[in-house]
Image (tube, rainbow, N blue to C red):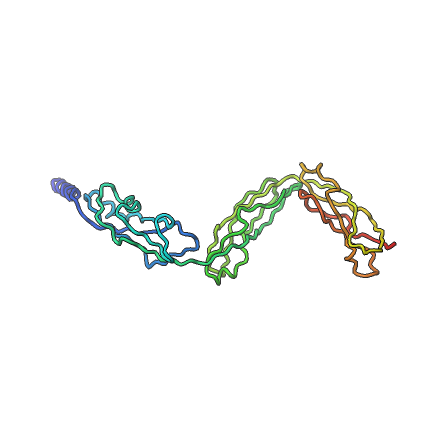
Length: 299
C-alpha cells in the first residue's frame, strides 16, 4: 500500500511540473471547388511547440490531436496554382486547437503552400430513366419538374469529352394517384473517371384525375393554289382528348385547329389529304383524331 501511495505521489509530482514539448498536427483543406485537386506529398503537418503542465499535455500525448482544418476561401490566399497560408501565433486555426492552459512557444513552418491542379468541367443535361404507370383516370398535370435539369461533370478533358448526357438510376412507379416527389441518383459511366455534382436530383409533378373530352372541329386546307377550288369530306372531324377534371368545362372547339396541307398531295391521282391537329390548349393531352383521312374533289 505504501508503494502504491508513493507511486501515485510521484506521478502527481511529475504531472504537476511544467514541460515544453512539440505537438504535431495534421492539416486539412476544405471549401475547395470540385474542379480543384490538391497535389500533396503525404499529409501536410504543422509542428507547434507549447509549454504547460503535464496534466494539460497528457491528452495530446495519449491521443492524436484533431486535424487543423483550413477553409480555402477564407484562410488561404490563391497565387496562381498555389494556395498559401501564412501562419501567425494568434491564428484562430491554431489557438482553437490548443487548451487555454497551454502557452504557445512557436509554430513551424510559418508558411504552408498547397499546390493544386484544376480539372476540366462542363454542364451536361440529365436524362430521366423512368417507368411511370398511373392509376385509372389519373395522369400527370403539366410537366415533370427537375430541381437540376443539367449537372456538372468534372474530370480530364479526354473523359468529359465522351459524355453528352447523364442518366438517372431507373425509377419505376405504379398505380400513381398522388403527386410525384422523388429523389433520383445519377449514374457515372464506368468507362470514364469523372465526378458529378450534384450526385442526385429531385423530381416533382402534379398528378390529377383526368377525364376524356370530345369536340368537333372544322377542317382547314392550306396552300391551295390560285385558281383551284376543292370540296372536302368530311368538313369537320372529331377530336378526343384527356383533360383535368377541374378544367373540363373550360375547353371548347375553338381552342383547337385542324389543318390539311394541299402541298402534301403526292400525285394528280391522289384524292385525299391527312388532317393534323395544329393547335390545342396547353391543359389537354393525349389528343387524337377519330378520322385523319380527308377526301377531296376538285371543282
